[in-house]
Length: 61
Image 1: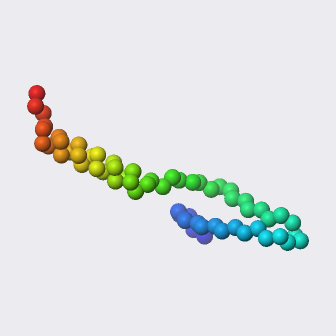
Image 2: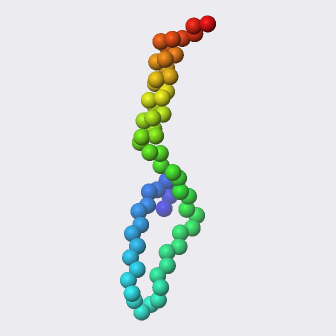
Image 3: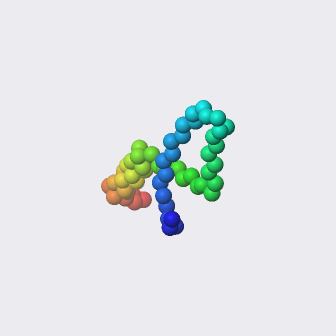
């Protein structure tokens, strides 16, 4: 394997067997939150509204 970012999907099924209990060990894993689409949409909507208001009203001092 080479260095880089990978997306991994894991499915686990523990079925009775005579060998004992199953175990899954994950080490050196790093989880990163995934931004929600509505959050990103809200940020861009807020920024665009701010820019429109700034250009429309500008400095009225």
